Image 1 (spheres, rainbow, N blue to C red):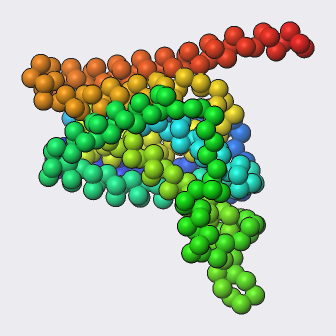
Image 2: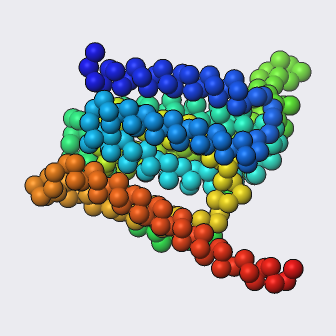
Image 3: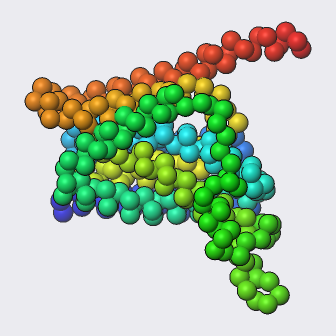
Length: 320
């Protein structure tokens, strides 16, 4: 077996066992998930992803190992933006707490299938038309700039989105959750789709929209298909537990968006300057710089957000 086949095989086995463990032990039907449980589940998925990264490092060398870790951290940090939108969707449609874990799980699994298709097409196009990387680089520059300067008060309304309006136009929707069902039948025996079905579709569609940023960003770190697939899937699988862990605090990371934006701009510039970078710096050094930049910007923005929020705590306590 080749290195690629070995890594794919190990990834497949790990993924299957992890999903069985998650579904069988961590995700009982129609139960709420506490912050403590979410913390353990997040730790489980992050540890599993990093352990797989260690395996890639051991099996395929330090360069590929660092590429995987950089790609995973990039995807993981971009997941926080997904979570913020997910929170708005669940709130807008009034999904009951006990149904959220399963709805999230189905949405995440659908997102994985679509990401695999999206990545396959993207990698195939880049292999045939390498110049597309420069377009991706320019796109990331534009996205990073827009993200950095975006007004944080701009609200996303799921019920006013094109996705929801499309479903309203072409599907018979009902305004209830069907007691946990995704499809119900009326007195004439015709299928109708509940708000849980709507939310699942919206979660998968929104994740695909975010993939328009994240996948080009990962391709700015590496063009290795194995690393792109595995880092993306591990990051998406951790979305559900991260949702329950951060949903009460995600809005407090005031500078995270700017930190992500700087990383996107950095990777965009790196993609545009690929020719000259390859002349001046070995690939291993480029990967190390990308990893250092991701850690510095994402970690720094989170720390800065925490410090800013801490400064506001004493004023609140004085009133008590």
